[in-house]
Length: 432
Length: 123
Image (tube, rainbow over all chains, first blue to last red):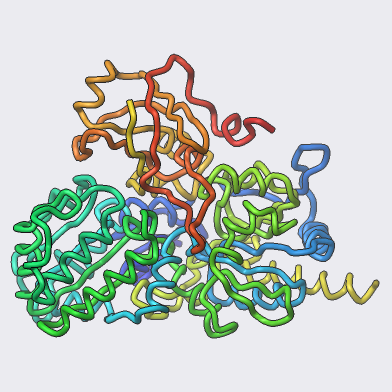
């Protein structure tokens, strides 16, 4: 029987669009409507890992789930300092289990945020952020700034649902009633659709933000005629554009966090927004990439007090980005086993970190094969959250939403898998 | 030619990023984009490859044009190829420098490696 399911949540990016329609026939997803290309690709599904596997003589060999759980537990027990990494593309409930496991084995829990918006979180810890919900921006903002982000390609429905092109209660004209400013080092698709594009040189965000802060603070006279390749005249025009908005919103991306300055760029942008609030209403928000990277930070924060890179080796949570973060642990060879869940560090980390990962036993929990599978010693296929199991995820503005289950599958969910590994860890410990 | 490398998301990279062993993803993330001026200056044409070398490593990628790029900048969709050129230093905050990497760009006859060859290179 063909079934149409409405108001499905898309578990791809931080927009967590909740208006998708999915047609299911005989327990299979046949059609997706309303999602972007990225979301459709995920919801429609593709090649799955079929069975749990362990590596024997260099080759992956199929085994049972029970054997995989036991082998994973053995690896974690035998490790001196294991890393439990990923979490951004699974549910909050899964991370809660992961934290219990990390406490049990004295491991480090780190999320993909540390190579994404981790510096944004550090900046917010230092400075505080003037935030809002996406709904407030949709309904009120008349100036949208995209700084170092490209929603046209990374968050394709963001502009239409929440920002520049959305029609809201006090913004009935949508795109026509708004100004859009894009700040970037290259002219992206987003920049081509802006009212104004400010092109800056790579690694100069901090200088540009500082100059804008000086102009907004009435100290334009002290500025040189040229700041990091941008004329003072242009910066004054941009500052005026910001000050004259009734409700401005800055969305910022990895252009700030991946560049020279990292969290200090974000720190400075937060100060700019704080100072703009002396003149008008302004808010700022990070464009979170994975659908539950915000939730992963929330769960870690309410469990340990810290939002990422939490080391449980000392018996109490310890947090020090640059020391307990994934890249640093791997490049210093300070971890000796890894449980990788809902992520692909082999593709997303610098080569030097990938080489370190390849040297240690790796447990992978994921629905799909990816380059991390090439190094994994235990591979455990899982059900896809929001499609095959339910759970909780947080949208990029911090709103928690309930993911739905659309179809039945035989794969266990991440919660079930982590509980089984935890049970095996406890049983093996008792046996010894 | 010396250039600054930045990496970032693209639509095709995103659409393929949960099916990373697929040709769609691999083709997208093994491409290096240059400005029209730099593409012409290097004498490139369809199907030609580039060798990119940074202080941290090297990789062969297919060359393409992105009219939004200024001269002296190359763009690689985020993924294993861009990360061959990225260092591990996080400046004490957990984040490597995925953008703003200085690279040397040279046309080459070497082929773009298969994902398995790339990942297992040197092992």
